[in-house]
Length: 157
Image (tube, rainbow, N blue to C red; front, top):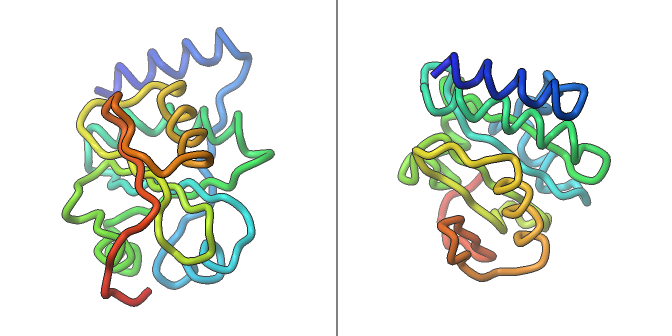
């Protein structure tokens, strides 16, 4: 799996000239409200664990998209091994959905407008497509990506 990540990074470097090494800020329950809920910006968060093989495969793809789109959208990472981040992940339903998990927030209500979760690592184009559709639509995506505009939860952040 690490080999796939290395190959992907080399391909991105050769194709585009650079690979972003940063997927944005670390987000936890402690800074979620100030960074995400109170922000007028669109945020895309990757929920992951450094121990998760699929998360390791997703990392260079997510970093590439973050580097490409960072002028317009804010990106962050939620490491669920951190106890404060684990609580946030539970509140947002990530623990039931599984990791890796990508959620997009475009409104200041703290509810995701687009969600991707799964074992197959999406391509950079698939993540970009998810973000674009999440900005414009509230429908389920027939390609396997999954979009939501409303999430019922009784949890407090």
